[in-house]
Length: 144
Image (cartoon, rainbow, N blue to C red):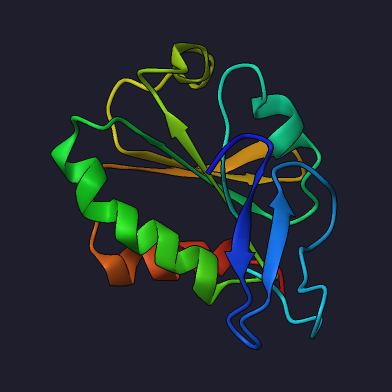
């Protein structure tokens, strides 16, 4: 994943699609028009564009590679991008590489999951919580 976007295989037809990091609306398959999972990275320089242009709710995972609990919930966060394709954008932020985002949000412990709606923080979860609880939390915000 890069801040410019990533290539995603469509879960419906298998076609490869370039998914941009920043844009309004949903991302859809160019071939079959199915909603695609939207999982991208952001850093201090790209955060406002990647999150600010989103019209979908945005789940932001602030993590670090050395953090055991972060690695524990990472597969769940990535699965949520697939489960809520077309209804939720997921953005991963490495706190070691982007300390400005942590300072800006007052993050003192990781993993921290932020939920943005309409360009502003709507809620947060701190720590490694069970998959079912994360799914339920994200589902409360995912666009209908």
